[in-house]
Image 1 (cartoon, rainbow, N blue to C red):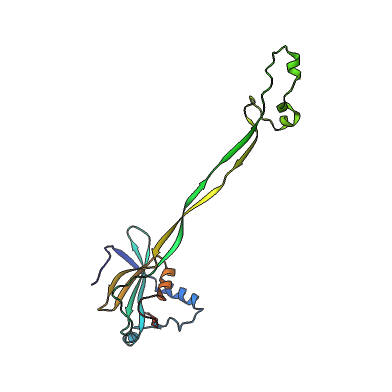
Image 2: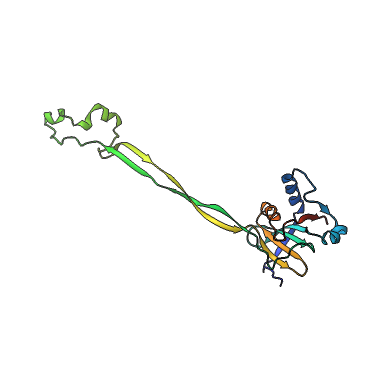
Amino acid sequence: MIKFRQKQFAESDAMRSLYVELMKRTKNDRRKFPIIDTSALIPILKGNNIVIERFVISSSLFGRDKFRMYLKIGAKAKMPDEVRLPGVYYDKRLGNLSLNFKSGIFAGKQDEGGGGNRKGQQEKTYSETPRQKIFAKKGNGNNPNITAEFSPSINITKEVHKLLGEAVKYDKKSRSLVLEFDSIDDAIQALNILPFGINYKIYLLDT
């Protein structure tokens, strides 16, 4: 049974981008991902081979761009009942939490002597020593002389699970598969873990 996701997509060719990235990772070893033309397609599909017919960027009206890979599965490759790629886990950052702690040392109050009390004017508390006055701030005496502040920052993350790719079309009868990915990197990782057996070989179709 063929199932299509109910979305409208506008597709642009991205096979060149895929090929360039594959060559980077294989150090330009073209034997690992051979390119064939349409004349070689039928013979290749008689063996244990997978052919990438198309690789495109799929742009929907809403949401991010996706990458779609159109595959043909060879006659000797294993055909599962359904296709499901494995998932990957990663930490998603949700934001930062900052906590502020402040503390201060307050000066003691002066003796409240009368204006004509000479003794009260001459006596000084400990808070009126020259050292305290150096650190004192102007005001009514209620402000802190020394202030300390500590602001620890906490990263808030959440473990997220997502599928490496998603099968948007799979037809066993026509031996065709369409996979959708968030990036070219995800698509390349999926090429090594396709559910079509162990020893399949991948070709790219040059149309």
